[in-house]
Length: 119
Image 1 (cartoon, rainbow, N blue to C red):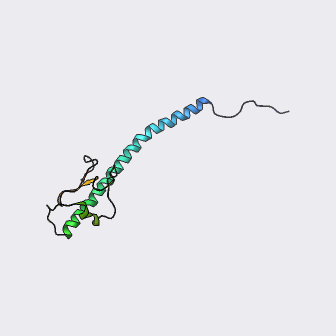
Image 2 (tube, rainbow, N blue to C red):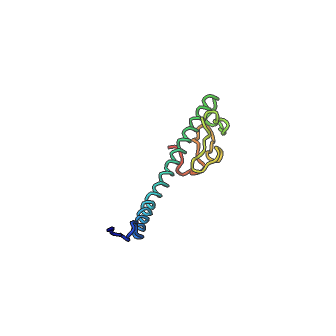
Image 3 (tube, one colour):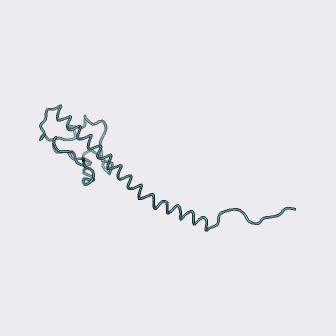
């Protein structure tokens, strides 16, 4: 004689709703932290790019025997940079990412000038 169990195993609607609520709560906690971490990493990458550009400008001025007031353009320092340098916060080219003035002035970021600057 077999005993029949009419109940089938599975999750109830309440259990599924609790799991979805917990996942939503974890996402609400994690997403702002992810955005903050991404912004910080973009800022650090841009500051590193500014250091590389400043080093390239100084090397160019030293090799070409230019004064501190000599104007610098992108084509002057491009040979001293290993790769194409753009701001990770939305730059597409060097020209729309960074500003060069002269050999004594530090390069500046055009995208987020308030926080992306050399210390």
